[in-house]
Image (cartoon, rainbow, N blue to C red; front, side):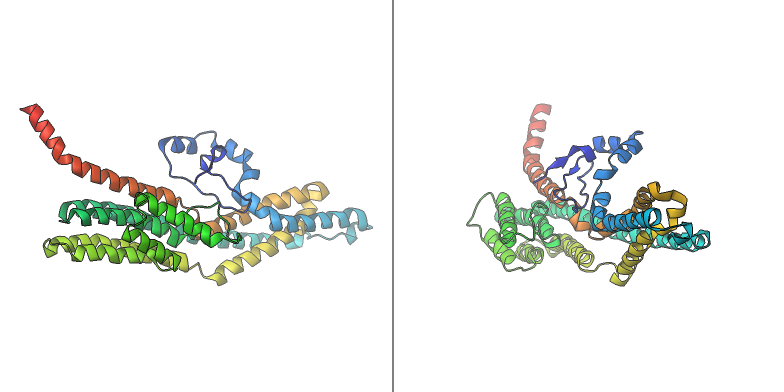
Length: 363
């Protein structure tokens, strides 16, 4: 599933120029490279391969370059004298500088709002991870039926996978393209394959068939899994207090699902984001007229691209962060739930044997 780009700190390799940056979960080695004293040199050398720069190449930088090139051509080859040249003189520089400051503040606020959504999305996925671990542990302690215990553990794994596909249609299979004529079938095949991994290729398992049917019908699969979990709890023969404790962790899963839905379905007010986008487009295309007098014919074009990149790059990063479930490593989070549930089950089943072994050795 993952193609790693080692040049950029082990991120996922982008298949297209317009793909966003997708980080993997950091390890100590990642943090060591991230804090390297040589990081600035490396980051400058990789500017042209960075996601914001490549995403802005066309049409933004292309249009700005055409305007800057046309302005230079006119002023140098068409204008008969300096009075006929077109550019902003010193009397307009103050107004343009003030607009630049206002745009910088507006863009910074835009990025801050988007980063808040990214942080909230990551927090909710962390809560799903924690609730899944608690639910798995409590299931092994308090659910009486061995069959129900095993079924609950499988549903916990399935929930994390189903949540991925609910929050991101591709389910972390970023190589899939919506323009493909069989896109829906490809997504369903990937979902079915991941569910079969959980249910150990048991095609006749009732829950597996039900989950795949829900997915095929575009139902809310995570919510259906919650219902199956609560059905198991309701049939449990333990005391009400223990069953309520089990249901408490299921409630946490529902709360996180609702919070993730809020992030996914509600963008930053579009009037704000579109206004920022319009102003940045006009500002970047006015840039050549503002700096031509100072930079001259040779430096106007590169200076325009460089200055525009500073603000437009920030705005583009904000656009990517606004949809956190498209850039977060969802598959790694679900794999973490999968591995945690397996380890908890193994540790719980081996606990009694370990105590017996240690008791025997001690005696």
